[in-house]
Length: 309
Image (cartoon, rainbow, N blue to C red; front, side, top):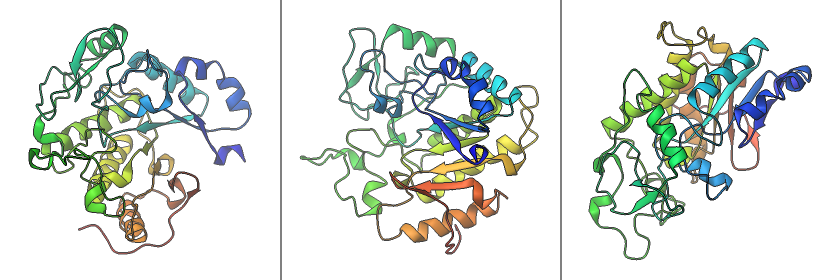
């Protein structure tokens, strides 16, 4: 039975998980899901939700593992016939109100020395985390993740006097897909630069050898953006690309697992189910490998409606 179960090693360092791999394998587990691997600040306030407030798409975290530690972990898992899935946060950046350390100050919207001007507030990050970014700054073939003001939803620079840019109607998809989630700067799904950064991030995950992703905050993204993100990962993870960079051979589509949070918070929930499922069928992913959940219950999609345009 364990081979049909994904072992969620929530907020665990990959080196700690490695010490348990023999036990995990002996119990029949063949898939492990790890927490977000992008940089965040958890040195001072070790709360799990900080993992979901990334400061950049750069890979490497003192609490989950450096790029090299993650690469080695995936290789060891692969040798034990265990595939690794990654939790990803691409909808938003870190909370602009945080000011939690006494060390260097960097722009909240990323650690790429880009002054966005979307909001002038700053976040402080520890020297240890900064060192990780500097070590991994080239990230993907010299690529640097950079952001600009237009990469965030700011609604014409006129924030609501009471709510700022935050979500004001949780039943309106147009509202909760374009406004900020409790102060988290929301990335603009229509921005070409955001699309490019996400494509590169998905390529990086494939190069590392991840066999699946769990997409956080899905309902806060445009449906087409969710599919485009998934398609990029699947094509990179299964395609004959990055021959010189990738650390494991490509996976067959039957090995890929896609996990999403709730696709919608409104009346279009079933419709979003069908759209996404029909789109994923074009990628030849087995339906049994596609999982959705709404905070509590995991379940499969079985009710297709229409297609993406």
